[in-house]
Image (cartoon, rainbow, N blue to C red; front, side, top):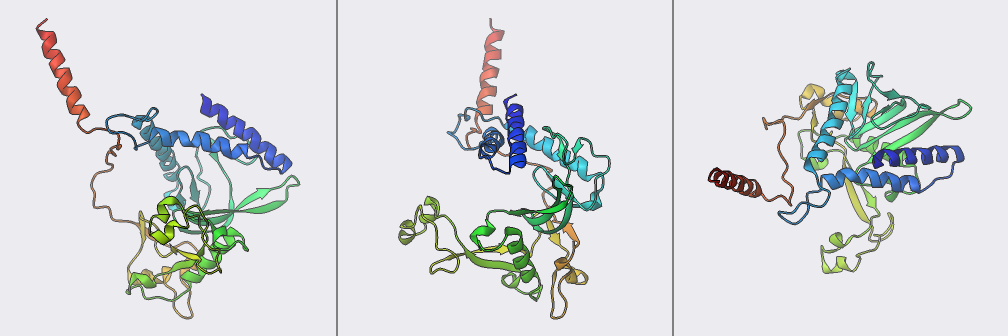
Length: 312
């Protein structure tokens, strides 16, 4: 299968990068090519009544279901050790004993394997916003810490290019969490990061006004320059699927007051699943290109064919 071939080719290139220290852009281009296969299978945009050439909702759903099954199998080995799920990864406070197909550093990793690594520390804010120190060992066996950083929808370097990305996130999140606020008050005073941000002005963004249109295809002013834009990151909530415990006895987990910082400034805190009032475990998602009346038309045509066959 071509995906397997591309995966192994990229793995060889990555090995060369680690050995030589010279980055090879082919690694990124190969990754983007085979990871886009799922997106094309799940493509929902297209002319009504005509499926895109390679769209296949069944294969797309099967891919998602398989990944989620693997994540749940891993999590159920020690549910209370789980910190968070990623699309194809999981972070826990200790090793998940009994998990199959786990490969450690130095071992050959194939499609479907788990890559195991340990972290020295971490700051987990909400889904897609976190950083941790990945433990690695160089050729001499010396222990090093490699920062791993994720900021969904943004790039820390576009906030402040003078500091490391993980340092920027840690400093700004902790500053927001340590600011006292009243949990009974308005949401506007809840912890958040509001900072100047450099971004590319897309055509869609430029349609906001005639003045904005003149900036299409350009970068906004850098932070600190006149006309620089700002971006806001809500660091109070923990995402849409879990929530902070609203009971007053749990406020010290996430509320700082003068003389005492919130517990989440120095450790993990308790959260609960968000209440789901929808009894359905899942719902079908209708692609835009799918005509809802096609099924009915096919059934009627098959019925007429059966009737006609009965007279032959």
